[in-house]
Image (cartoon, rainbow, N blue to C red; front, side, top):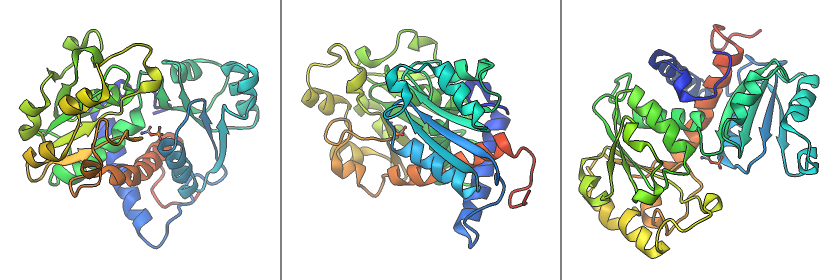
Length: 315
Ligand code: CP
């Protein structure tokens, strides 16, 4: 694996290798030796041209736990805000000796563009490109579901996951559909027709416009943020109506299987797609998703940059 740009680039075996490596690294992180020497002397650049809390901090924590040097670069406050291009930014990072670039960008395909270019030689990790994909988020989501519900199984066969809300603008939904179905789960998208992408009929999922009709059958419900910043027109009549039909609330929580879990990639619009009592309920694994994100991103960096080197071995 040279880059991580899209879940579609991963075979099932490669996806499971990332999840299994993350399990091993989580065990190491939980032990007395929090930091591994594996990436000592390597430089990882967080190139964030769009806002982020979880992904940026999580990749930084992951890189530091593997002893890499980390450079945090955000578009705000950099020469990107003076009009510098992605090419010139990438070449500047190359000149500084970046071994890997973690890129978040508002343009779908920006990570692929960087990887395909001759601008830099290091690995490229897609940390969210427009409405296209967010592969590390899907991997940490699958890791979290597997830990809770797979009962020792390797993949997610037999599990039913509902992805609910603003699928149209969601790179998290796209990556999760690809990964969860690759790992054997059944996925149902629940959304108003206006928030589903054109061509969704060809995705390997079921579609429902009625949250209540599927809530009792799901093992995990993944609520999506309503992405107001990407909306240039009206997609639903008003917030109250959206919450009533597509929000997760106490009543829907009660209808879920006793073992079912509540997920959200964050950041949440509390009171819109999810009520506070649902987000903070005993079923919620939202903060576990954040914790697991560090182990999964350690695994991604480890497999990209250290290859077959044994976990815990020094260079
Ligand atoms: N889930 C996610 O991508 O969150 P951030 O935007 O805070 O990174």
